[in-house]
Amino acid sequence: MRAHLFLILVGIVGLNLIFQSNLNAENASYEDIVAKFEDAKGELDEPLEGLKAKYIKGLQSLQKSERQAGKLENIMAIRTEIEQLDKGVTKQVEGYGRFNRLQRIYVREKKKLEETRRLKTFSLASKQRKLLKELEVNLTKSNQLEEATAVHAERVKIEELIALTDKGVDPKSKAQESKNLMGSKQAKLKAYFVGRSWGSPYDSFTFNADGTGTKEWKNKKWDIKWEMSSDGVVRTEGGGPALLWTFKSKNSGQRKAENPKLSSENWKVSPK
Image (tube, rainbow, N blue to C red; front, side):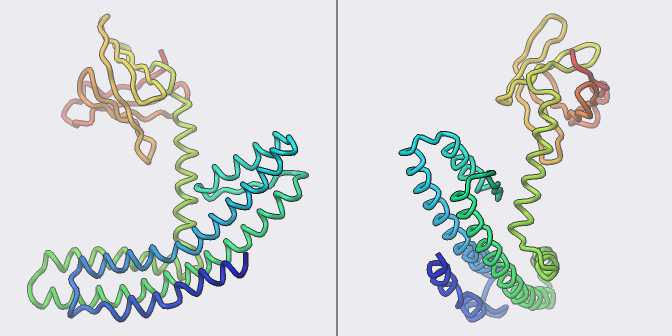
């Protein structure tokens, strides 16, 4: 595995040189600068993807031997591990030595590669900041203020990336951690209303797990659709104006019309 990882790492040694030599603020457009930066940054993920593929191959080989031995619980543990990898989650299994040893090797090498990615991301982002700053100045001098403003906004994003990596944080790992936390929060909120009916004193909304549902009002029914935003607010449409729902617990919540002029739709809501 280490020889394999060495070959992967050697393949990206020239990334910084390629990125630096192909671009400068005089001969490249804003779009070119951003596109080439994203391409170069994306290539930094390749060693980790290669490591993950090798780990999955090892798990599948172990799964095959466990199937031949008829050990269902071990097979289920391996399947769970493979399914959770895209979420950046690994979990040791008590008493399962071969699995745990394989996983420890993966976790150790993954941390090394994430640190390599962090350092290379910092280097790339620093070069990108310099290019964007030069382009911003040039555009401002030529009175292309709208374009200069767009470049400035991109440079601010790069500054944030530099600050993050300079603190020793791998940006991809941080993003995955935030995504996992968001998914956990959404799952908790969905438990409040999915499969249940909520509404005001005058109507009732039923929320199905597949994002559909029904609205009932004065013995009439309408089909609705619902979706949850990243901050946990649920939007419904159908049977009237679009509504925004905030569920505080299994027994209390609020809703309001998406259109602020329709204040008559704003109510405290509860289960029906």
